[in-house]
Image (cartoon, rainbow, N blue to C red; front, side, top):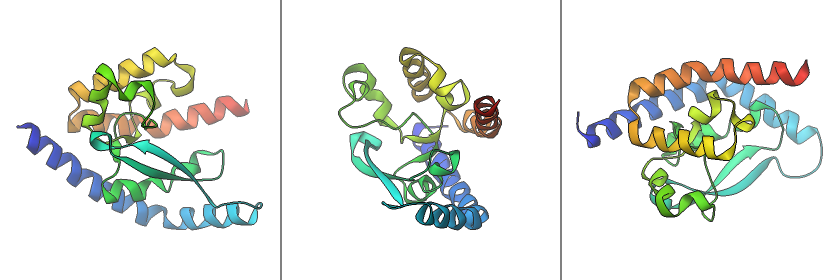
Amino acid sequence: MTAQRVMTAKRAFDVAGGTLLLLALAPLIVGTALSVSLGGSGALLRRRTVAGLKGRPFTMLTFRTKSPLAALPLLLHVVTGRMSLVGPCPLTPTHRECAGEGRRRLSVRPGLTGPWQISGRSDLPWEERELLDLHYVDHHWLGMDLLILARTLPAVRRRRAARFA
Protein backbone atom coordinates (compact mmCIF):
# COMPACT_ATOMS: atom_id res chain seq x y z
CA MET A 1 0.00 0.00 0.00
CA THR A 2 1.40 3.44 -0.89
CA ALA A 3 2.09 6.07 1.76
CA GLN A 4 -0.76 8.21 0.36
CA ARG A 5 -3.25 5.32 0.68
CA VAL A 6 -2.09 4.63 4.25
CA MET A 7 -2.62 8.29 5.18
CA THR A 8 -6.04 8.33 3.48
CA ALA A 9 -7.11 5.17 5.35
CA LYS A 10 -5.78 6.60 8.62
CA ARG A 11 -7.65 9.87 8.07
CA ALA A 12 -10.89 8.02 7.24
CA PHE A 13 -10.44 5.93 10.39
CA ASP A 14 -9.85 9.11 12.44
CA VAL A 15 -12.98 10.82 11.09
CA ALA A 16 -15.19 7.75 11.59
CA GLY A 17 -13.73 6.85 14.99
CA GLY A 18 -13.65 10.44 16.23
CA THR A 19 -17.25 11.05 15.16
CA LEU A 20 -18.48 7.84 16.79
CA LEU A 21 -16.62 8.65 20.01
CA LEU A 22 -18.01 12.20 20.05
CA LEU A 23 -21.54 10.86 19.67
CA ALA A 24 -21.11 8.06 22.21
CA LEU A 25 -19.39 10.32 24.75
CA ALA A 26 -21.63 13.38 24.23
CA PRO A 27 -23.38 12.98 27.62
CA LEU A 28 -20.00 12.63 29.37
CA ILE A 29 -18.64 15.67 27.50
CA VAL A 30 -21.66 17.77 28.51
CA GLY A 31 -21.48 16.50 32.10
CA THR A 32 -17.76 17.28 32.33
CA ALA A 33 -18.31 20.76 30.86
CA LEU A 34 -21.06 21.44 33.42
CA SER A 35 -18.95 20.09 36.28
CA VAL A 36 -15.96 22.22 35.34
CA SER A 37 -18.03 25.37 34.81
CA LEU A 38 -19.92 24.92 38.10
CA GLY A 39 -16.80 23.90 39.99
CA GLY A 40 -15.12 27.28 40.04
CA SER A 41 -14.29 30.48 38.31
CA GLY A 42 -12.17 30.71 35.23
CA ALA A 43 -12.31 29.41 31.73
CA LEU A 44 -13.98 26.11 30.90
CA LEU A 45 -11.20 25.18 28.50
CA ARG A 46 -7.42 25.35 28.62
CA ARG A 47 -5.75 26.58 25.46
CA ARG A 48 -2.26 25.52 24.42
CA THR A 49 -0.53 26.16 21.13
CA VAL A 50 0.97 22.99 19.68
CA ALA A 51 2.66 22.01 16.43
CA GLY A 52 0.40 20.12 14.07
CA LEU A 53 0.98 18.40 10.74
CA LYS A 54 3.97 19.94 8.91
CA GLY A 55 4.61 22.13 11.95
CA ARG A 56 1.49 24.25 11.50
CA PRO A 57 0.55 25.61 14.93
CA PHE A 58 -2.98 25.30 16.26
CA THR A 59 -4.67 25.94 19.59
CA MET A 60 -5.32 22.67 21.39
CA LEU A 61 -8.32 22.74 23.73
CA THR A 62 -8.75 20.61 26.85
CA PHE A 63 -11.12 20.84 29.81
CA ARG A 64 -9.75 22.59 32.88
CA THR A 65 -9.61 19.46 35.03
CA LYS A 66 -6.85 17.07 36.10
CA SER A 67 -8.73 13.90 35.18
CA PRO A 68 -8.46 11.92 31.93
CA LEU A 69 -11.76 13.61 31.00
CA ALA A 70 -9.74 16.76 30.26
CA ALA A 71 -8.84 15.23 26.88
CA LEU A 72 -12.44 14.87 25.63
CA PRO A 73 -12.37 18.14 23.59
CA LEU A 74 -9.41 16.73 21.65
CA LEU A 75 -11.91 14.57 19.73
CA LEU A 76 -13.04 17.77 17.96
CA HIS A 77 -9.46 18.26 16.77
CA VAL A 78 -9.40 14.67 15.50
CA VAL A 79 -12.60 15.11 13.48
CA THR A 80 -11.46 18.46 12.04
CA GLY A 81 -8.07 17.05 10.99
CA ARG A 82 -5.74 18.88 13.36
CA MET A 83 -5.02 15.71 15.34
CA SER A 84 -5.25 11.96 14.92
CA LEU A 85 -6.62 9.35 17.29
CA VAL A 86 -3.08 7.90 17.43
CA GLY A 87 0.14 9.79 16.85
CA PRO A 88 3.12 11.47 18.50
CA CYS A 89 2.62 13.46 21.69
CA PRO A 90 1.54 17.06 20.92
CA LEU A 91 4.38 19.53 21.55
CA THR A 92 4.67 23.30 21.48
CA PRO A 93 6.13 24.64 18.21
CA THR A 94 9.25 25.85 20.07
CA HIS A 95 9.95 22.48 21.71
CA ARG A 96 13.40 21.12 20.89
CA GLU A 97 11.86 18.00 19.34
CA CYS A 98 10.18 20.09 16.63
CA ALA A 99 13.60 20.93 15.18
CA GLY A 100 16.51 18.97 13.73
CA GLU A 101 16.01 15.24 13.31
CA GLY A 102 12.98 15.33 15.60
CA ARG A 103 11.26 17.48 12.98
CA ARG A 104 10.14 14.29 11.23
CA ARG A 105 7.55 13.88 14.02
CA LEU A 106 5.73 16.73 12.23
CA SER A 107 5.18 14.54 9.16
CA VAL A 108 2.13 13.06 10.92
CA ARG A 109 -0.63 14.61 13.02
CA PRO A 110 -0.15 14.62 16.80
CA GLY A 111 -2.26 12.04 18.56
CA LEU A 112 -4.88 11.86 21.25
CA THR A 113 -2.95 8.77 22.34
CA GLY A 114 0.21 7.06 21.19
CA PRO A 115 3.00 4.72 22.21
CA TRP A 116 4.01 7.16 24.96
CA GLN A 117 0.50 6.91 26.50
CA ILE A 118 0.46 3.13 26.79
CA SER A 119 4.12 2.81 27.83
CA GLY A 120 4.10 4.71 31.09
CA ARG A 121 3.68 8.31 29.92
CA SER A 122 5.02 10.57 32.65
CA ASP A 123 6.98 7.73 34.26
CA LEU A 124 9.24 7.47 31.20
CA PRO A 125 12.35 9.60 30.76
CA TRP A 126 11.94 12.20 28.00
CA GLU A 127 14.45 10.41 25.75
CA GLU A 128 12.34 7.23 25.78
CA ARG A 129 9.15 9.12 24.93
CA GLU A 130 11.03 10.78 22.09
CA LEU A 131 12.22 7.41 20.75
CA LEU A 132 8.70 5.95 20.98
CA ASP A 133 7.28 8.88 19.01
CA LEU A 134 9.95 8.70 16.31
CA HIS A 135 9.55 4.93 16.02
CA TYR A 136 5.81 5.46 15.56
CA VAL A 137 6.40 8.10 12.87
CA ASP A 138 8.73 5.79 10.95
CA HIS A 139 6.72 2.56 11.28
CA HIS A 140 3.03 3.36 11.86
CA TRP A 141 0.26 1.47 10.12
CA LEU A 142 -3.43 1.04 10.85
CA GLY A 143 -2.90 -2.25 12.73
CA MET A 144 -0.48 -0.50 15.10
CA ASP A 145 -3.04 2.26 15.65
CA LEU A 146 -5.71 -0.32 16.54
CA LEU A 147 -3.36 -2.02 19.01
CA ILE A 148 -2.46 1.30 20.65
CA LEU A 149 -6.14 2.28 20.90
CA ALA A 150 -6.99 -1.09 22.45
CA ARG A 151 -4.25 -0.62 25.07
CA THR A 152 -5.03 3.04 25.89
CA LEU A 153 -8.06 2.68 28.19
CA PRO A 154 -6.43 -0.07 30.33
CA ALA A 155 -3.28 2.11 30.59
CA VAL A 156 -5.31 5.12 31.74
CA ARG A 157 -7.21 2.96 34.26
CA ARG A 158 -3.96 1.49 35.64
CA ARG A 159 -2.46 4.96 36.06
CA ARG A 160 -5.57 6.30 37.82
CA ALA A 161 -5.79 3.21 40.10
CA ALA A 162 -2.11 3.57 41.04
CA ARG A 163 -2.63 7.25 41.90
CA PHE A 164 -5.49 6.43 44.30
CA ALA A 165 -3.90 3.36 45.92
